[in-house]
Every structure is written in structure tokens, then in C-alpha cells.
Image (tube, rainbow, N blue to C red; front, side, top):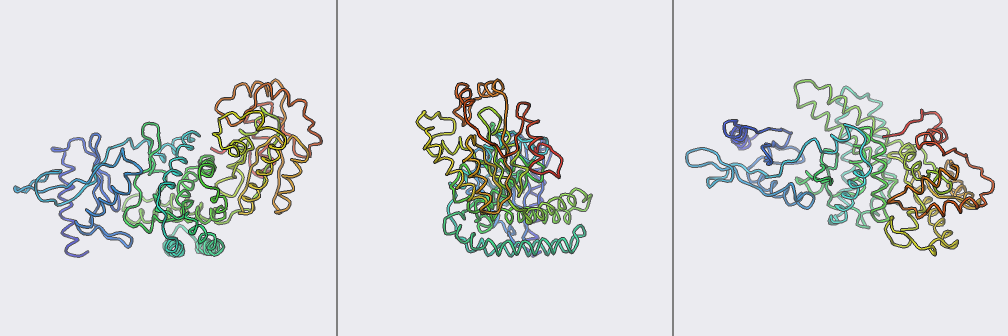
Length: 520
């Protein structure tokens, strides 16, 4: 520590003592991190950069801390204008007393923010129980919107940094007693190999404008629910290169963190919603997801190790978290072969519910991409999912086009090494044969499930639908009884019971060696 840094630290301690003084601030709550200290009082939060210098950031002087505060406001206000307000000085008066935004000489600077309910950050919600599907969709939409508004960035530095990240993680893991040499070697070698395989893909993504100045730190603790809407906050401000990344790498942090909290359904739903809201080029980048998820988990494991090193007290939680993230990193970097799961059946048999429920269990992480003909048809006609289409949109020639789009998109995703669950009626033998052939051409495992339920059950379910992409009505569902289904060489599932019963029956055919259960 230099003399100037030591002096800054001493000055900061006096500022911290002032802000934490119960005689002046009787209800203040202090939170310390490695690079900042936050003081919470009433509906206001004051965040001060600590006088520290690390390899990746330098807050060692007052001028640098002021610049970092200004940059944090500039970067984060677009994400969270309701949280971030301004930079305020902590001033010293002539008599030596300190004041917030006074007339004296500035001795420190703070970011003034609106305090939010810390219990409403998504990590707390995920820890408490399964995340509401509508909330997950809203989070995905917020992330997609942030990427749409983010400026493009050069890709060269981002791609070049990946090997350094791998090397840095490996170095940290080799000094940790909780990881064996073989485990560390395995993760290191697999990560390097994955980077080599996808390097050209990442370079192409850079040319396509998919590398942008993103949030950069989208773990679930940096997303908070305010007025029933997810708000992204605490984006990286100290180094634009760290946040100038592929948009899918930005998304991967949130998906990986969902997996860490055992919220696999949320992780899978995040991916599916994001893909539906962003350009189709992202479908051609799914081959990079194993590396992206693994890197995010490994970085988080490294952070937990560093946290353990800073704390002199009980380090059990930090070690356990580091181990859990490390295991996710290893799991993600060794993706199994993809599969194509086709779910057919007449309207009201529960295809879409089953598809969403099965997808998280169809590896690789974070689960399969779900393709639904009802949604593809709406996209084809450029209308919202819940807009009703005229009967002309369901002419046989149009339906043939939609099934062809389904086949092409499924093949596109499977070729990236990622699994697909397709959801369509598949009333014709030719349609069922075509989707099976698509898997055969790619030498992909195929599972065909055909759901059946009695007419009364189907009519009841269709009649209760609201806000759904399907245009089927009870009348249409009744007319489907006349369809010539032909020979069904898929596994027939009795779907007349509850969705849970249908799921349990179906899972036996997806993962026969694992116990059937709904992933949360």
C-alpha cells in the first residue's frame, strides 16, 4: 500500500465512522464488499468506492473514485433510473466536521441511490422457492431489451480474454484444497478444447454485432423486483472490456445462477424466452453455451474462494458455494449428445404444458429449446402470440410451410449440439416421419411421444384457455376427432390425467435411468 493510498484509507475510515454514527444516523445499516461500502438509511442508499487497488480495478485516489462513481451512474442509469440518482460529495467543513453534500471541501464521493427491498432480489426469491414463470419471462425480456440498447463493441479483446479467464481460474483452483488435481486438470483441458472449437463462431458473432457493451455481471443478486418489474442494477463500470462481451455470455450468468439455486426450469425458460425475443442469429451460437455457462460458474467459484480468503471467520459456506459452482462448471463443459423430443396429439391433450415441463430435463444445460407450431405460425404472420389468426392461416399449404419451418429450425439448433423439444399436432403420418427423419439425418437420438385424451377432457381444457398462442376452440377440438391419424409408431401417452401424471409417464422415455420429477 502506498503512502497516498494509506492516507485515503484513513480519510475513508473517518467518513465511514461519520456515516455510521448512530447519533447522526440512528437507523443506518452498513454493508461492506471488497470494493465498496454501502450505507442504508430510510429510503436512501449511499455507496462509496473503497480506497483499494486490484489487478482489475483501481480506486486508490479520490480522483479515481470520483471518476468511477460518475461512470457507475452513467452505466447504470439506463438499466435502473429508479435506483441511481447522482454523485454527492462528502465534505469537510472549516471546523473539521463532515457533511453530506455540504459547502466544504470534498473528501469523498458517494453514489446516491434509492434503497430497495433487498429481499426482492432474484437470488433471494430463487432461494425461497420456484420462480414464477411470468417473472422469469419478464427477466428474460429485460435482459433482451438491455442487449438491444447496448452499443456494439469490438470482439477481438473479448475473445482474447477468454483464455486468460480460463488460466486465472485454473491457477486459483490449483491452490484450493477443495478441488483435486484431476478435477482441475479436467476442467482446464475441456475449457481450452471448447474455446478452440467455438473460436470461429465467436469471431463470426463479433462481425454480426453480437458483442456489445453489456451489463457484465448478471448474477441473480443484481436483478431486483421493483413495482412487480425486474430491474437490472450494479452493472460493471470499472472496466468496459470486462463488460464488452457476447450477449449470450451476458445471459449465461443469470441462467447459470438459476442452476446453482436448483431452479432448472427457470434457467431453461430464460433461454427460451430470450431466444424468442432476440434475432435468430442466436440460434446459431448455442454451440458456445457449454463454454459460456462453465466460464460463468468457474468465475463464481473463484469469487467464492476469494471471499473465503478475505474472511477470517467461518468459511464453510464460501467453500460449499465454491464447490457447487465448480461442479456446475464441470457439468456444463461436458455436454451430452443432444436429443430431439417430439410431442404430438390433438388440441387439449396438454402438449405445450408437457413440452415446457420436459425441456429442463433434456440436456445439455440449461435444457432444450422448445419449438411450438402455434408460435411459429404467429411469427410467420408477424402477429403477437395471443392474436387470433383467420381460418385462411390454417389452410393445408400454410400448415405444410409451418411444419417445414419447424423442421428447419429444429435441425439448425440440433446442429449446434443443443437439444430440441417440438410441440405440434403431428396428425399426419408424413409429419411424424419427417421429424423422425430430421433426427436420423443428424444421427441424433429421437423420442416421439403422442398424447391421447378423451374428447370431454380435451374440450374442457381448450375451453379454459386464455392468453395462449393456440387458436383452437372447443369446436375445432371436436372436429379433430375426425382426423385420420393413421399408425402411430411413437410412444402413446395417456394424457387424460393431471399434467404431473403425464409428465411422469413421459420422463421415463426421456431419462429412463433417472427418477421422474418436475424440475423447479
